Image (cartoon, helix red, strand yellow):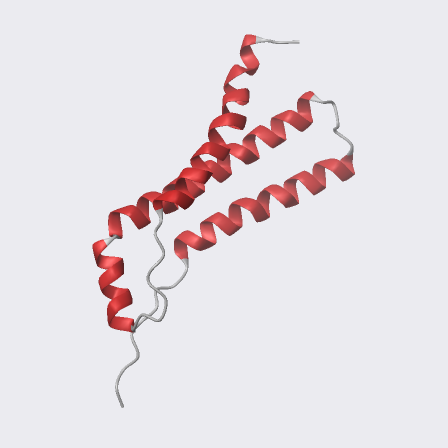
Length: 112
């Protein structure tokens, strides 16, 4: 049964995956076989797109997790095992997106 109060959650289920797909389209991959200097130049040239793609990945993941949690709640599946599995799955899903945002930067190799 449709309730207007569920509309924002339904939109999370539609917009979240769309934002996640957009994040993958936004980020271009550097050319294969690039040197460290070429990778740095690529990162400098495409900085804004890389940051936008990372933000879209985080927000898309968060919206999908929100939708999943509310969907399980509305379905009445609130058994302890399902709750724990949902929380663990949500944690790892968002943690993977955040790990992509905060991974350490690669430093060019220093000549010997």
